[in-house]
Image (cartoon, rainbow, N blue to C red; front, side, top):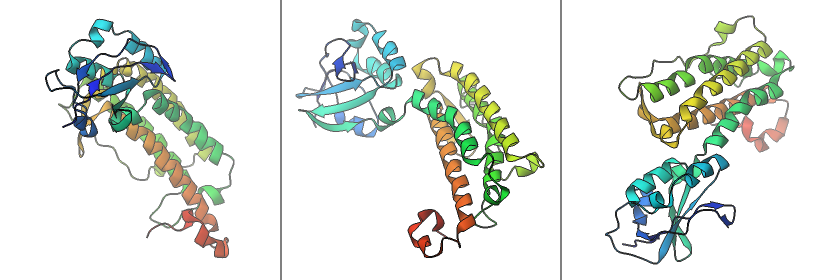
Length: 279
């Protein structure tokens, strides 16, 4: 089994900003599945692991580690680095042979940035449009853009922050309260789309202000809670799902509006994927 040497290098762009690499054995085949930092007794190989800093906020956390801590027991050091949200690549004589997908793809700052922008994106797309657009939908089983906005406002009030707090403060000993994921437009009956969108925007700002203090250190992303049907989930997974939930419903609203012209586009329909959904 290949066991490259560990070389921990802290980088910003192409510039090395941290201590010189330490040399400890590392089982890179375990990185391909799930990171597991091992004690230095498994042999050596002429490769290295490069740890790159992806965000300024994370950089300060890593530079705060002393050289002794970085050069200390590999298992403990590795856990701290991974929880800092660093990109971990395993190199075998210059060729990338593996990486930890969770660490590479999830970035807290990027996730919060997207969550901040969703209300504005939604308003920019929908505000001021006629009801012919916002009440259009593919069929009776699918939502209109207005229903999507109502759902987002309701979920913002009942779901994400409640669950984030339970992960942070309660842990997996108590299941999250159930949430109704059905149509919530009746709750906002008589309210124009812009008013519901404003409510969603206010809730989102408040929720992000409240969730940030729960994320004060990297270990907070590994805290766990108990979903009533999905089982144990981490804070990182909740934040990721929150962001993708936004993207899912932005797409849904656009798709619903597109079906207003499902017949008017004529033969062009064959070229318009949004109008050719799987049955």
